[in-house]
Length: 403
Image (tube, rainbow, N blue to C red; front, side, top):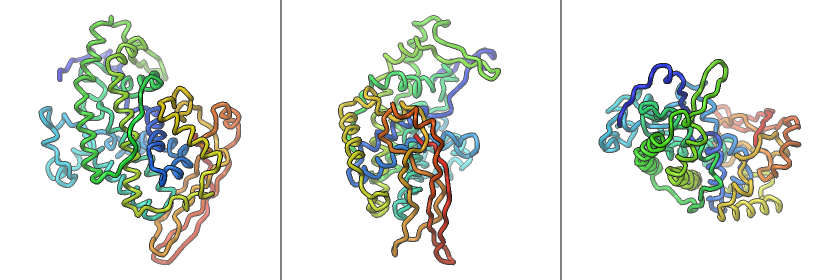
């Protein structure tokens, strides 16, 4: 991969993107993943879909407060070698630490191991029948899986900063999906059990890495055909000047890589749903209806689910404005309580973190302005835990502003 040295002034103007898929992409992938689940899981996930979508961006939101977070979203394979790096990095984490050190792995990314780790966390949440953690780890697992589907999350040149293409990251994963989602075909297969989540994660990373050459080369093709002043737009915010690719550049780049973006975007939801299914099966296949209140979808919820499933099958979710990522944020409206872990003879529940559930996921866009004007209602959350001294019960009150 060639390296070009940017003039210092231009380098100061170029601003990279730290996230992946942008909030729009992560929320879309999480929602579509719900539609690819089997019926045994789909009712529960649909009931809590708005909260899942809201929490799907939590890992990006805590980057500034958690010093260990950044490295969980990527893995720079070309740091280890530009010639068959997958043959040189052990898939087993302990073996990789022994070969390269934990600090090196942290610096250059750990996303495949994080996917395996969060799959196990979700498995334990299902085993404990802990609804709060089921939603939390489902959303966050989905985030890391989605990150692994972005080619630019597999290289040290993650933003094109080494090839005078700074800004490529946000263009590929945010600007294009947000602008062209209605043109993408994101229909795909339903979820299936994953025998080895770690091996599957490594396979995903390897396939993403295979798109890198085209990602950079096709951007270069547009650059050669478009005069410099037409490639970029500049904005001034908080005393800083930021440069990004122009709409004209994005339109030309979309013609060359839109199929690639759509491909990764349509595969990711099935991968996410498959690991949710896998964790549920490995966690003892709990009856998720018993973790809902009421424990069945209402007639109205069933009708909305059928409508959305039909739109997902026809690939018209965006055109029909059924994507939560397309809607403005709204406050709590008649939330379904997220119940804490249920005590059963065979299960010991751990302490449950505080949270509040989401509003009705099927609310129409027209209802959003009125809902947004309301003050978020306090939600009481009951928790139950077991420790050395026996069972304890607590009640907390939380205010949430989900989708």
